[in-house]
Amino acid sequence: MSSTQVTADIGSAVAALRAGGVVGMPTETVYGLAACVSDEDAVRRVFTVKDRPPDHPLIVHVSSAEQASEYGHMDARSMALAARFWPGPLTLLVRRRHTVPLAVTGGRETVAVRVPAHPMALELIDRLGEAVVAPSANRFGRVSPTCASHVIDDLDGLIDLVLDGGICPIGVESTIVDCTGVMQVLRPGAVTAAQIEDATSEDTASSSGPARAPGMLASHYAPRARVHLAGSAREAAALAASLAGGPAVRVIGAGVDAGTYAANLYLEMRRADAEGATDIVAVMPEGDGLAAAVRDRLTKSAAERS
Ligand code: AMP
Ligand code: MG
Image (cartoon, rainbow, N blue to C red; front, side):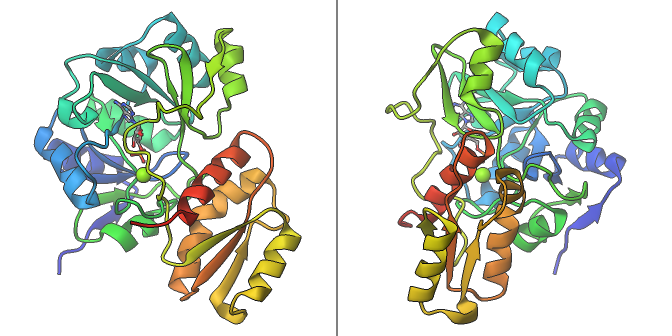
């Protein structure tokens, strides 16, 4: 049985990518599955390994705003967002340059770019000398990985290497903002719409409209256990008691702040699955920023699965 190397040696990760490999990469949000952006075979392998439909575009990870402009058209507004939030958990959707293969963008003329705030990811991209694509390093539709062992749990033997950078401090995926017209938040994350408006002095459109991004499905981020949503810790306890009860039911998110909730969300879901839980009752946190991001992921994890 083949198995995947886990290492903190950045040089080994660079060598694996140069050889056309796919590599688990730490970021401050979740672990990504990296491949060289210009290597179409490696990009195709990312889709195969994840079992991800080819029309679900990948985020391009770069180490600076200047490098982002090699891959996408960064206008003044995008540059203002980059200056304020990069490195950090904000992905900008801009018009594609031809340096980005259509295999990366799911055939679209736009590209999603981000500078991750993780020293090992930044060094990896710098030493490689080109951008990497990096969707979350998990099987399609499942829970994202927030440490190296989660990546191994899902993808051992299927990928070349995991660069071990410890635990992801944020724990949920980046905010995605469409900058190709009136700005619109396509996926909530740690950076809020209010912060984006403040940095650009422009309004964002409501994200409830029909213009959702490709690859954003009703059901996503799903553990094996069935997820139930509760409005408060008290409601969660009552709901848990009304279910089968006992060790097969887990309650998550009671009495924790949004940052802690986000940091532990996927870990708790994976732990519940590993322990054979049948049901997870999740308290829906109140507020914007990470609370809104957690509500978004919980709603999708609780949705009907196809
Ligand atoms: P993930 O791979 O989990 O980080 O999610 C990436 C998501 O970013 C995709 O599923 C899309 O929703 C969005 N995205 C990435 N690239 C594009 C693009 N070119 N156009 C629109 N949405 C994009
Ligand atoms: Mg994902």
